[in-house]
Length: 57
Image (tube, rainbow, N blue to C red; front, side, top):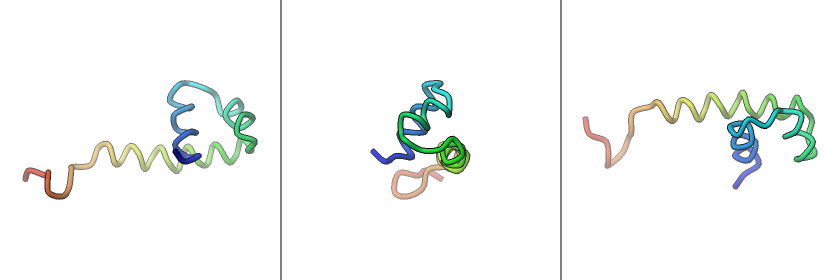
């Protein structure tokens, strides 16, 4: 599991950015950037229509 996934999961479990940053040895601003970047990406993946062989149009 990548660091960005760990940050995302900890955030979803309602840990605050300060806790996440301290436990991972990173700055709060880095965690904030990761969350804003990855949250929008994961939400768009979750709401997009499936593609590929399993898609039913």
